[in-house]
Length: 214
Length: 214
Image 1 (cartoon, rainbow over the protein chains, first blue to last red):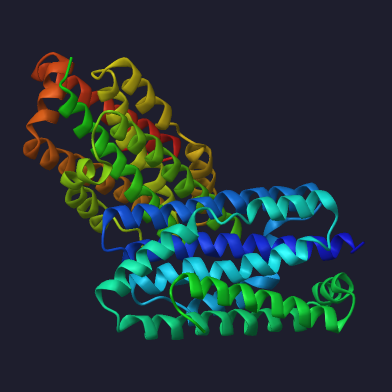
Image 2: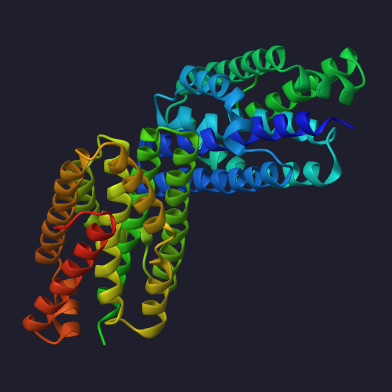
């Protein structure tokens, strides 16, 4: 079993992930071409805030302080968001689906390595929240109208996964507790490699569901 | 009893009020000097989105379309927010308390003039949500440290109430259904004047609770 510190570290990373997702999704809602689209993206943001609240409460229950637990992860997540700031509505939709999808896959894998109750909480907050259906519809409609944008959105999807992996590596290099959690949880470095392959495969499936092959 | 159209109009104004509150509170959270303050302001934003959802659902139940019902009120509310964009964290805190407080008082008064079930929904979504305690603490701490800011914040409070009244007048001048709802609900123009006095008095009480006399 991992140490309580490692669990609080993980919850801190996840909590700041949700808080920054709230912030950036709320911001991205301003790119929506319709009030209905703006409502949809705002709703995703509000859902992420609800998840933040659950994770922060668990940190407090475990004896931690949410602000302190999140602090080590602020820089990496804000770097990710500033490098992947959408400049169009469709980029924001793809990011809401693909970018958050990668993060969810990663955390769902890691949830298996922490005590049951916390693992269950993590799996519970990592719901798709209807993102897939929404993103697929928005992107397919746009590509049907203007097929030339498909290539640019496929590149955007690759950039999202690249930056997500890069920032995750920075965090793991900095936080021994999380690196240990991952290596011990998967068994060994081969296990880590298999985990990365699974996450990359699922990313490919999401891009394919948007009509884009990697 | 007011017409269904007037009720949908009122719900549309209120729904866009909540949606734009979500948007601007989420944005203002970025002004917070601490992660804890940012969380608190983000939480207010997420709460407003929950209220938006309830109001939009009621519009749908009454046979309306949320986006259409909100459309007539977008310009007035966005004008209000662009004129009262906070430039400091304390301005955003005073706006979250005083600005939204005025709106809540107004809608709570109007809730008495619409059918029971809708009136109850309006009163339910107009909860203070802990804003008062939060704002009073933040402002009192800041004024204790730096008494000179009290005067500037008092001016800011007056600007918020002035712009809120001005935009409400624009909306009422444009929407006969809402003007009728208000005049018929209060009884006559004397009743409208009494309503405005009550709202202004409550604004004064809020400013006083922040340690600022009008």
